[in-house]
Length: 173
Image (cartoon, rainbow, N blue to C red):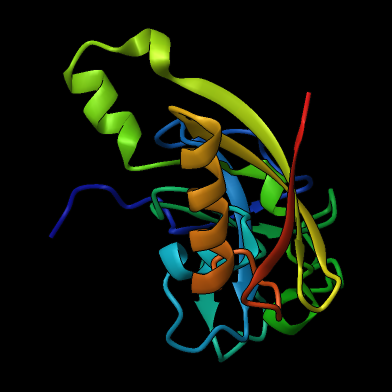
């Protein structure tokens, strides 16, 4: 049995920026996630959060340390519970795919061969067959490599678009 007798859930009046125990970043807890993992959530919604599962406790914590050591519940300065609106998975909007810097497989080869000067940053505007438009940040060794990466991302569904075929790929300066 550990000697640490501090509670796992800590009452706070506002969201802390860092965990009081380990110093890690504090993130939101998302409920209604079922068996979804943090990695699946990050890939699908492009946000950082801890999965709270399907059952919501009577006095739910709404923030958590990113390592999971402590959870935080919002209370009034006098210690009474604050009515809070918990974050539900069904209410979360996906962040744009431009928040992620996608890189091609050729990058690793270029780094191994000490070809760092062949690596370039691209901003590509992708339009699918359904008229959906998404702007991507791509790291690739050539424009052809960047086009292949964009096509692969769209066809595999990682961007969250309904369309699966690229009609137009424009590179933005």
